[in-house]
Amino acid sequence: MTNIVGSHLTYVDPKTGKTLWTADVENSEAQTAQNTSDVSAYMHNVRGVIYDGGQPADHFTAPLVTADTKNHTITATGGVTVTSITQVGTTLRCDRMVWYTAQNRLVGVGHVVFKKGGITQTMPSFQADTRLKRIVTPAPGLAAAGKRPVHTHIAR
Image (cartoon, rainbow, N blue to C red; front, side, top):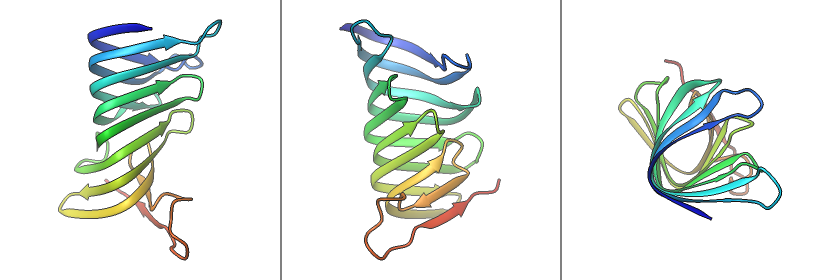
């Protein structure tokens, strides 16, 4: 286990060499699995940027972020805010969000608040692409019985 206080991190896709995300972290712990390159990291008080295709897509903040290189997931908890860089005025907040880096898919649950311009909508969960252009609420598989998800396409 490695402990780091006050750092700037850059995570790069090992296959493409493109930046996946960057973060400023108050403190973190990282652990490498024995005899592999799999890394699990726990980061506290994180402010960062999520990338799509090597280009900045969203700003995000979260009290706790875990990174799992084996499963290609980044999980943020404790009150997550994601603000789109490409879709001006688009923000999502939730209790917990998982970013599936290989699929460029965000799934958020718990007290979700979606804001676009002057519109505010609350929901139990969402699924979105990394650039927050397409949002499905509630997230597929998380809808109550008999409820149909609402698909939203956000044009600039």
